[in-house]
Length: 236
Ligand SMILES: Cc1cc2nc3c(=O)[nH]c(=O)nc-3n(C[C@H](O)[C@H](O)[C@H](O)COP(=O)(O)O)c2cc1C
Image 1: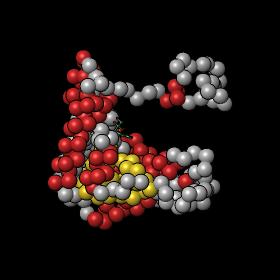
Image 2: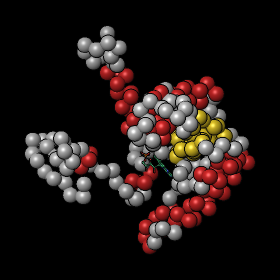
Image 3: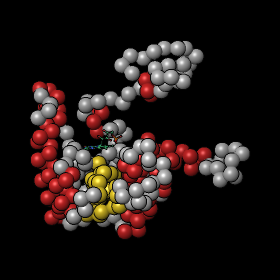
């Protein structure tokens, strides 16, 4: 019999639980070394279905997915990236600037599929259950869908790279996204030979993962009593 979490209806087996954590810890932002192998429609469909099963405020499901395979479109998006990235790189000087310019921050043309994930903020009418106090919850919902997509893709052996260094208004014009629809993410996706064990930015020496203890507070902000001691953290 499979081992599972005791006394729970529909419990995950230990292996299933571990598989979920594996997808989480081995998910990576990928923007290099995409294989040219085609993503079968059935696989794409599974990934999009996982995305579509994310939670959303008022069950609004504000997302749409625009699948781009055409080379010509990718080339035009790459031009938008180059413009935006040249601008962004001016923010970094000296050694940091040199490091920035050495980073690979997109895989637009190499990836077999590029995907726009949008948020239609008007979906469900003016009164969306749960959104009256925090208008951005529809955007949060779309990010939940993107995370589902990212994890499902990892389980399929497909890498995803999120490209935000783009003029999203110009991009919307290019692919015909209507004005009121918010473009939340532009993603590059494709099979990859391997997933790196650490984020690219960490490997490049850009930034390290923060210690979790630094980010967990108990009962009130800054209170660190996980091990029975009280300690205030600086720069909270
Ligand atoms: C909202 C968002 C936007 C991002 N935009 C970019 C981007 O434009 N270019 C890039 O190389 N990575 C981008 N990333 C990827 C992050 O750099 C990456 O998630 C982070 O370094 C941690 O690495 P990991 O995703 O492999 O764990 C983005 C990630 C998120 C969540």
